Image 1 (cartoon, rainbow, N blue to C red):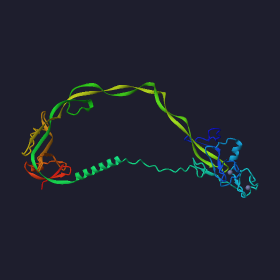
Image 2: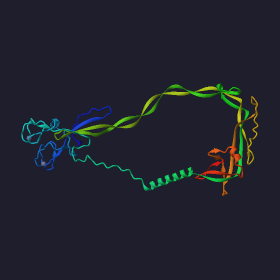
Image 3: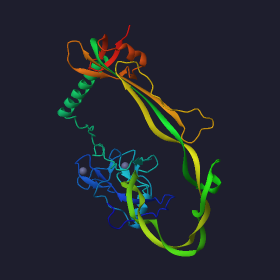
Image 4: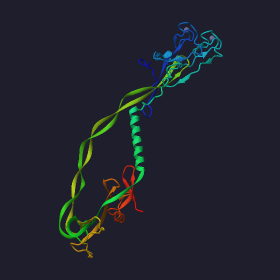
Length: 387
Ligand SMILES: [Zn+2]
Ligand SMILES: [Zn+2]
């Protein structure tokens, strides 16, 4: 309705750049007698001559024309029509006598104006009240439901199996113990460090100047390209912001004019400080020093005999002498083999209740002894009943 000849009050842009503009359009009314569609300003039905009573509703549609004639605009803005108390005819605000029966205006009351929300046309039955269909989400496909069901079921079965425990008789078929000692040797090693970081007890061997770091020194200016983004206005979007039924067959339509922007990448020349790197020297010292250095691990293994520690050869010199050995860690590992009663299949037992076998447990689990063992529903050995 606003393609050509727009007559608008100039709007002031707000902080966000949004302007409000208004235009006056002529509406329509449908004759209650013959149903003909009449121009809003028509006082009587142009088809059958019936009067435009107070009950007639004004509306706008795609045929509504913007009013840009000064005289017509003045009529539109003059105010609502008034209703004749004698013949129900509606006369323009400027008329002092009823345009239908000629009665005096004195008791005539003004037709009501009304505000319409954006998109409303003013028609009762209009299509503005579109029945909104509730959006249905796509149904879950059957195969997916089935797959999820199977998955959940398997999970439940696994949970049940792993929680379920049963007792089975087992017989010990083999024993294996391993005892290891990790060691270190006291020896002279060559190291290097910056002069101030050389440890006590070091015997200096040599030293040299080396670049330790760099510092940046201002070194004039240069011009470089710098990228930046700029908001460029590319147009405007006009959105209806409601209407006013002026009560005289005309409507005031309000629009929000929203600017639209695009981010544009641009390049500009900028001056930038240049720097040059200057080396900072320090003294690197090479020295000899005594350290405990990892040395070969000693190990003892056995089966049915009582576990023993190997000889670590550690010395107790204070302070330590070159060539001295020391213990760093002791590691003991106990494993037994077993089979279920009536089954030839052997399996290893390294842990009970997730803890490594202790020496005490290992010494009880001698070859040929029989025990009640607790297995999970999945067949993992959990524990052995020692009582
Ligand atoms: Zn009519
Ligand atoms: Zn009248």
